[in-house]
Image (cartoon, rainbow, N blue to C red):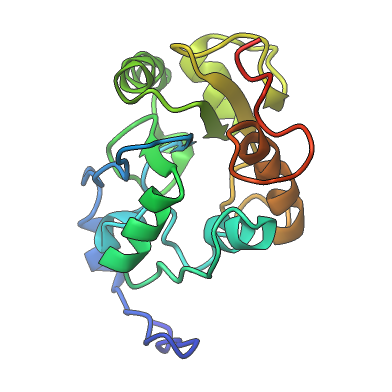
Length: 210
């Protein structure tokens, strides 16, 4: 196992391979609250995420650094040892939520079956209808295509709504996605955030339901 890491906010926990493997199939609660504007959708929890019960928690994941760089959240979040109650409250206060297409944890997203992803797409549609975010951003084009039966879909804003919400597909922030950097992720996450009215740049949210 690697040595613990700290950025001044506390040491990162160390998990053995056996401990992480025991997380297979574990679910992570959705992060959602009142006033939801922008819902990010991961593919499914990784094993580190399951161990810490915190979305996008793996130390190599760029999700929270990208949100902070884009100005979507006002202060950094270090989720590798688990989100604090204050972190969760800050996300909800800023109109942000997180869920997954598939609830069970796995070591890699390619372990999921096509039927699981299709069922996840149906479940996400019901979730969005219930919580009514203004914008939904699915993180991962390959998973989106499988979940919604759209093999030719491209990244960015989608032409259709999802249960009344504007729909975007954004890059997966996993460290395994070598095509993206924190800077490029921040730029692409800022687009749905503007549409949700979370960033005060031109073209914010007036047209999301047009």
